Image (cartoon, rainbow, N blue to C red; front, side, top):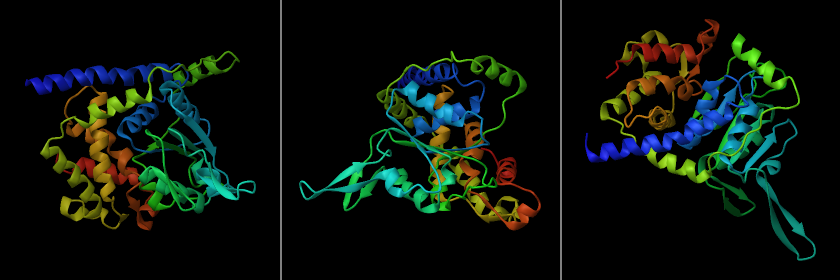
Length: 329
């Protein structure tokens, strides 16, 4: 083991303790849902926005609020509704008669962690107002561009789009989310523990255990995790298999995929795999990290055809088959 690798391993061991402190603190309030919490923390370290989908009552909003409280970061929550306006989100210019000038009133987007609650309950023009903020970490109000704080992360929740009163998100916006999480019901034992903790007024409280600077340091160490060229080739093959399945012995999927994953999928899959390896205390990425995080990166980027819907096949089914077929280095 070289000195550089030893030093990186020591740094990973020290900085990954930041994640464990967050996991332990959030676990005081959120019972179970470890998958959701770990993926939110992964997005935080990877500097990637997270879309959380699940039916009401699965602690989506609670988990995001707990992360913000535990990180000691600025936090804002916007409840998306059909009558929400873009100015309600990013801010607007206000005319001051006394001075005869316009001043900027900043919206809730100027924060570290933005919870876009039930994002699919607002129409497209409001959802689109987030595009510049999510991609460029800035917003334009009037003729002036304003930088957003660092770190800045959008954590959005949505109910399944077939429920009444919801709108499908524009593909351009969905693609800007690094991860899309599919949150499930807790198991029987977890639900019993939820009942014990929450069925009275004296509920656990979250205290800050890390700072935004701790997150920035963790990001720097995660960036240094080694990604072997063979694993890079594997990531590219997986993404290309969503676009040209016949070249990967998946010809039967051609009629089931309307559109394959965008180049952002390749970037985010590599970034997310590195952070997952970091969270696992490893100095290198293995194909297993790519497989583990793959569905969360690809499920919202693989658009299924009408034929797939007729067969009741989801993008998760297609992504699973791709990972089962593409050769692993």
